[in-house]
Image (tube, rainbow, N blue to C red; front, side, top):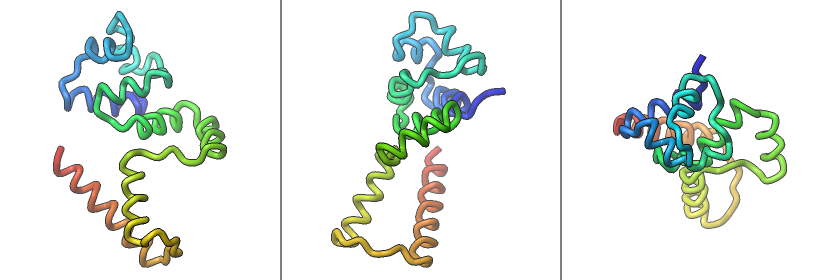
Length: 133
């Protein structure tokens, strides 16, 4: 069975036309067969290579790390986030910055209508991202 991480990487390689050899080189591997083994689920993508993989495939490294850790080591991810706080992607950070601008640095409570509205905004953003694919 192919992992979610492998599915993401396979899909992104296809979208960008990145060969296993090119991805292997970006990760510092001399042999591209290691990428093929990871894609087939014979071995996991090493966490220490996730940043290199993300950069080579133009993905947010924090997002890919979070996906990989939630799949490979969910307990470790929970432990890390309980100490350092949630791992935040660039897009999530932009949302936080916009929130702070909109609230003029105040910290209003999130009412249920606001929460529903935020969900609608996320749905809109996901639809826009899918339209670009």
